[in-house]
Every structure is written in C-alpha cells, then in structure tokens.
Image 1 (cartoon, one colour):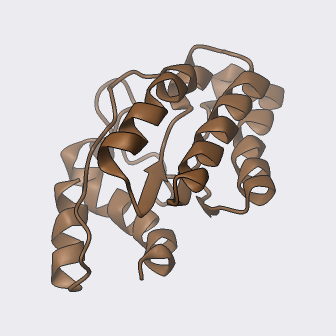
Image 2 (cartoon, helix red, strand yellow):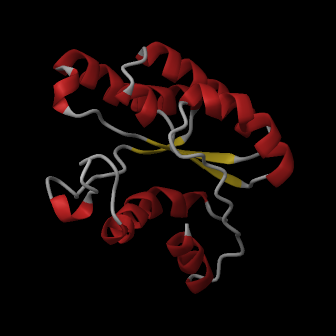
Image 3 (cartoon, one colour):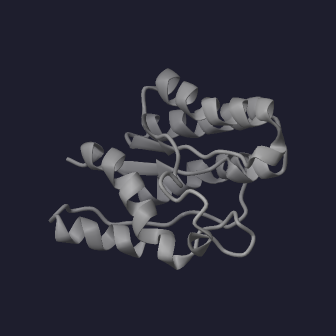
Length: 159
C-alpha cells in the first residue's frame, strides 16, 4: 500500500490509499464487511483482491464468485469504480478446479463491467526469492512487481 501511495503522489493524483483488508479473509468475510467499509471510506476507486483464501481452502468457486459479485455491486452502487484482481490456484488443486477458479475472475469482471488485473502474480514465475517459504505469499521484494501488475489496470480508473 505504501508503494501505491508513493506512486499516486509522484504522479500528482489526488487519492489516498486505505487498506481495509484482513489477512486470511475469504470472500464471505469481505462481503460481510463491505457495507461498513464503503460507508466509512466512500472510495472513488476500490481494488478488490479477494478469493485466494477461498481457493486455498477448496471452497466452491461458485460461492466465491457470488460473494465477489455482491461486493462489486455494492461498491458500484456506492459510486466506486472497481478493479478486480484475479488469482490462480497452484496445480496441486487439480486442473479442473484451477481452470474454474482462474476463469471466474474474468467472467465476473465481464459480467459486472469492471476492470480486471488477470493475475496479481504475473511475471513472478517460480522465482522463490519473491515468495515466502510457503511459496504462496509474496515477499517485500515482490511488492514493486505487484504494484506494476495492478497499476497498468488501475491507472485508467483514476481521473
């Protein structure tokens, strides 16, 4: 979040960054909190990066999609432009689940007419230095890559 704030300042874009995330949260947790977050912060733009924990727990993709769709709808109704951030599952979750999970983000973005970062970790590949020992969570060294992955789809939403 700090890097995004610095980029906004450097580009002279008058936005502040609020991190309303909770580590380990699923899409159902985000859905249960979104109304209060929207009311409290009244965002012009919202970056929605949820769902990975649903996938890691093997929860139904259909439920994740329903939850994320409801979050997007509430944010749009509150006047926020939404950037949905996609994730992918490791191959050990099986090709069918991984494929369904990955395609859910693009389908949701198309259906909700919202911007999309197809895959947050794009370009990080198997570079273990970019991931914590669990090989799932990014390290501090990965943060500039993550910012660039988000920025290219976020910038058009900033007016």
